[in-house]
Image 1 (tube, rainbow, N blue to C red):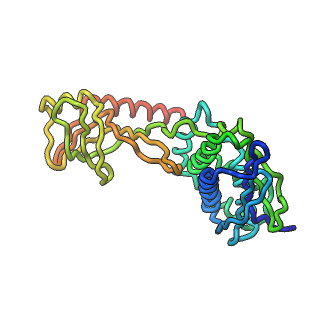
Image 2: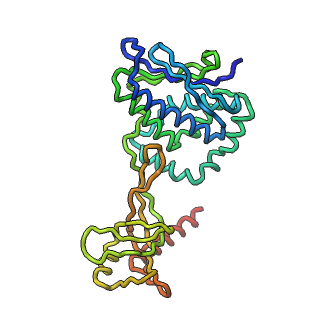
Image 3: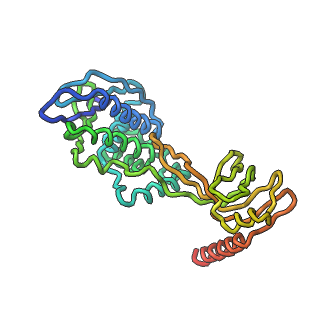
Length: 314
């Protein structure tokens, strides 16, 4: 049996047309190639894609994979076909699901056991069951979700596209697996309605570079993890004490605080930070001394109580 080494994108057009807007085609190709390349990278599969001649029947684009392990390439293409056609099911709980994914990113290798998946991809024959297992593991990958959202957003803007199809073929253009299609009315299921992610709150130390010493909506300046940041001071008690000169600052002064980090997805699915805010100042620290704030004592007391409850029920 021929090895699968071709991927097909089939545009179904109104009135059986065989022409397609060139800019739309170019944009869709960029997102598709990014998704296939990301899947190959995650699975540690070498894969170089080259375009081959388009065919009629609607409008059909084809890409050959010309490098890498043949069996592994087959799996990558099967996974890509599934990823493109299975909706992420985010809709109303979109932000919550994306937030869960962010939390998982730190331990993704362990939780999804990607090393095992990579070995399976390379060491055994391609099967639909294997592709389904891998695509499920990748279903919350932020880059894949965002790139696919871009892809379907582009398609949804053009009314002449009635549906889209994806096929995995062998070198003779014979389908190895049945074409999977997405109808136009289903495009919206794959599109993110917002790039915003839930904010993250961390206990942090910020070296103060420039406090705000007058009323107004000005940002404080500081160093967080060695990097300069601007942040809003939302701890009104602490801010008022600073304005009343009750809390002086000197070179090297820092605060221990609860730092809220606002985040969103960029156009390629990477997480970017859009802003910082200090919600609670726990402690003001100078070179040889430190002062705990009233709100800091309350915070630490509540934290200790919660941790004690966790220990009790663990």
